[in-house]
Image (cartoon, rainbow, N blue to C red):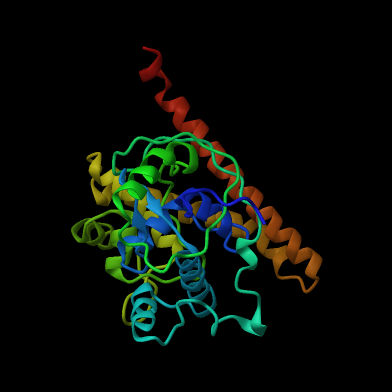
Amino acid sequence: MPEVTDTGFLSIGEVLGLLLEEFPDITISKIRFLESQGLISPERTASGYRKFYNDDVELLKVILTEQRRNYLPLRVIKDRLDSGQIDRTGEHNRPNGGPPESALDEPVEAAQALPPDDDGAEAPPAVPRSSIKAHPASRRKSEPEQEDRTHKSQAADVVAEPPQAESQLLPGVLLERQELCAMVGMTDDELIQLETFGIVSPRSGDPALYTDDAVAIAKPACEFLRLGVDARHLRNWRTSAEREASLYEQLVTPRYRQRNPEARAEALSQLRRLDVLGATLRAAMTRQALRHHFES
């Protein structure tokens, strides 16, 4: 077992390291988003850093598993957690009686010290490996000297939270309207503008649900709106993307329609390559068109 630190809890960066192997698409942004939606409630240190314990990590694993396995919206997961339909500890949700602490037995390499969290607290330096101490019976209020000791030691024992990453969503997970706005950080009015011109579209069905593609599109589209680009002008990107996709499909469709699995695999590989080349060429041409502004 790795050495236990005096603090007895993990930072958000260390929790991310524990979850990445089982959930490769998890990000700091996703963990913060789950907190903003009330699914997790980590404690905070005196300096504002999140404190995660065994039960917090287990709850995160339960939520992410429910998203990946059952494609449930976060609101439904929260309701089922609150009603007890979903076991917060994961004991009754774990198939084949898997070991409850298997993901916590591996040592975690500490992340490099990075800029402070969005709450403005200064980032303490990074330290070597750490793990989770057994969850105390009561961790909500410590005695003054214990709180003072924890505050003084966190510069040596707590890994700073990395800067917020791009908003991402696990593939297959569906978001409701308010969840999409919260994850991207946009207003409902901005979403209405993007939907009006077909930039962002919900998956067909009632109620309207949004996929990971909607998150990926809404993030830069919302930034364009805030930089003064009207939503109707963003249709140029949609039209261009659809034309590119049509061209790529024409190139790979004959091979993709073959019954030979190897031919289909080659077609998909070629399609990915075309997608990368298209993005590279588009970026290079845009830089060329704007170069005279920067060189002048």
